[in-house]
Image 1 (spheres, helix red, strand yellow):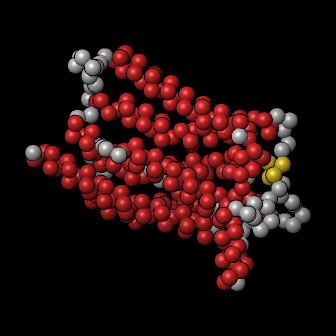
Image 2: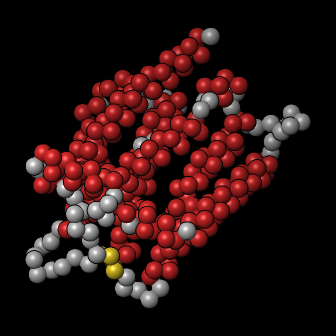
Image 3: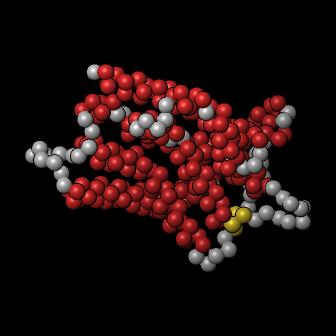
Length: 273
């Protein structure tokens, strides 16, 4: 649907581009500001956030090791011996600092970026569509942040423990490169954040008629297989980690069926009105 300007006239194509440019510039500026803050707080960013999941004092590691001791299940205790991180490039630590700060800036600015996108889309919606989409920014941002936190506190420590301690032979010691470690942490968190947006994707696909609750229920078994495959991709190759990731994805899928059903109900009601 075409947007209207303040004077009531329909906005031209170039007007759309000009408005979009403003939203993109403000979004990029917010990412830059948060990235700069992350860059200036190097010690906190790396020692307290990025590198923390490999240390014994990290919340998840302490909790699992406590459970291991309480129930006499040593396998539950992870990262009892922190993996060694090394740098092998002359400019490795500096470039890693810059890239990690940019990723941190993107993560921290997600709510604002989503809000800017919503501000661009909202004028093209009808009043009823705007009312039905109320809270969209909060939902999209909340799901993404939930996925990031889920990955950070659960998947990342498990991945670091498994991949950092895995050996093909006792003759080969593990010394993990800094870039490899950072890449693993950022990839897992960003990927999980996007996966947790499943209900949002289902909502829009249902709005355009591509998905229906009947289709999702009929394909539930296939969806569960895909969830397991996806869990295997974004987690270390052990069954425990895959189960922990699969459970919330199953819940999100079932929630998405309900969302699709609600969209279908509203669509039918609008047609009959």
